[in-house]
Length: 150
Image (cartoon, rainbow, N blue to C red; front, side, top):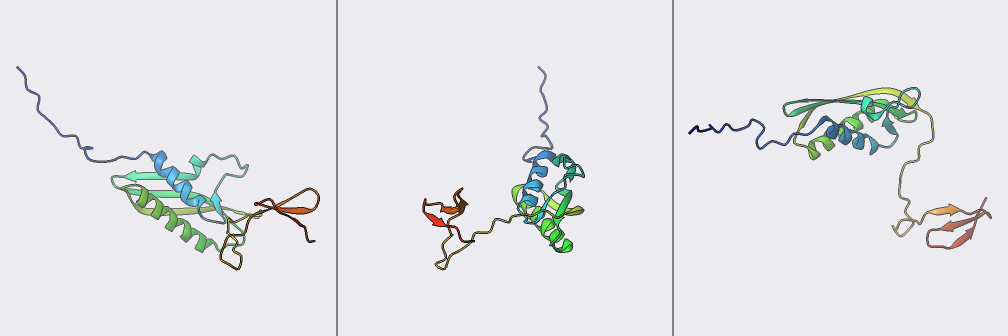
């Protein structure tokens, strides 16, 4: 009778994340930052996978991310915000530590970007969103109609 010797696996008690998981976390982190978006290339058809590069070495991660920034923003401040957001999100969602986040600004956008900011009325409550109706009236979320002021 032959007895097998038990050999513990090296990856036992470790959780290993794929590169795609960390790339997705980086894409979410960049999407949270107003006035910044992932670089799409000159034609605008570059896949997001080419804009984010992740190198995983044992328990540390190095991230390269290519972004476009709105012309009205300070490039160095935006790059710092992106670095902090990526580092925080990757470290909080995985067991890895981020050793470097390289932000490569590949372009500047001049298009109008709407930032999701909740408007407050005098009581500290969120104002209901208004919709433009065909006959020149504005319709508020609760169904009331008011005359549009030009």
